[in-house]
Length: 435
Ligand code: GLU
Image 1 (cartoon, rainbow, N blue to C red):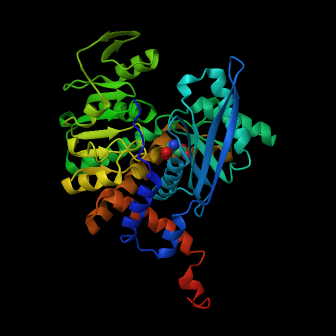
Image 2 (tube, rainbow, N blue to C red):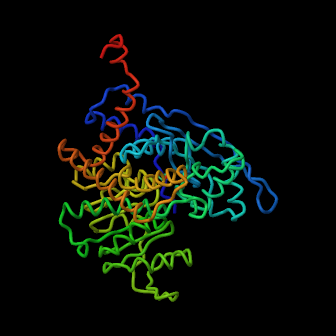
Image 3 (cartoon, rainbow, N blue to C red):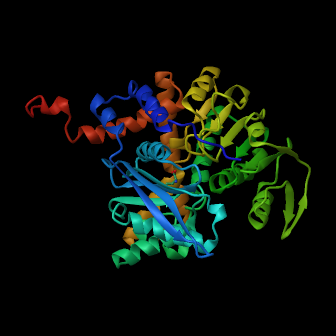
């Protein structure tokens, strides 16, 4: 199944920005600036297929804002990628990097393709072709891509290799999320899920949860979904449902998550199993659709797949008390309003999934230093950042009586506004330069 993104997702994103503005202590000029992406490119990527035929794929890259530093954000390979979606995703990257206070602006890229229909060689040609078309639009000091939906470390390695070949020098800092032997960082693989897990741990402390009493459903069993499920399970949380693009499984007693991951990665299928060593045995579970998973009566719902999955049509069915947005934009703004009215506590994407770009930043720093950190150091630094920003946003939400998303946007706008205003706005210039 496809999850789909509502059309007008960029407009939807701008509405949220407007809503948060009244809680951010900044001038209007920065807000207006942030409504317009800085630059966008659309390219055609010709790929020679294994049978000798030629396919041409559309590729996009949007630089949203670079006031706080070079732009940063992933590249997705998905059949539903379009420019409007990439614009929204780029805006969210600007906000996300500001939320965790790393010195980057926001960008995003994508190719409209179903990568599952390509052979490995075709995928390599497409990845290298993307860089050939984009080589002047990206770079370690201007715009640094990373993995996103259906792209991975190996693809980043190919892309970095192609970029280095074009520029005739080794440039490990041109892409993040690379394989470790090609300059990737320890801890980047599970960083998105781990960042979300650190947010849940903060909430656990505030609410005095006993993990064993807390049920969790995870929609999407890719990089982010697997990592957060594994970490929560290891702490005793009951992960009762997981799904992938083909459907899901449910067991009220909870699953042994490492077994599910092993089975999924060995067979590429999701099944309720218990694995010992290399032997996996089927265990009891009920099959659920992705829609049914979203409607389960669980404490924590983690949408970790695509955007727009919780929308007007199904929001009334959602029962979870807490939603942790590991995917980008999983809740439409209309659904958001309804959930807020109902008191659902949402840890928004620009905070919940910011662990990925945070460790990407660590990777870039290590590449530039040529000095690599231990895993413990990565975890410690990530934990500190996530806990600090979660609490900051939580306090802001409480002080202003607003939801966590509005608070996260206001927090990000505060940092972005500070940077944009430091270059001068009407208030400064109309006063003849006198402060
Ligand atoms: N694609 C990820 C995101 O949406 C990671 C971006 C990055 O590491 O630059 O946050």
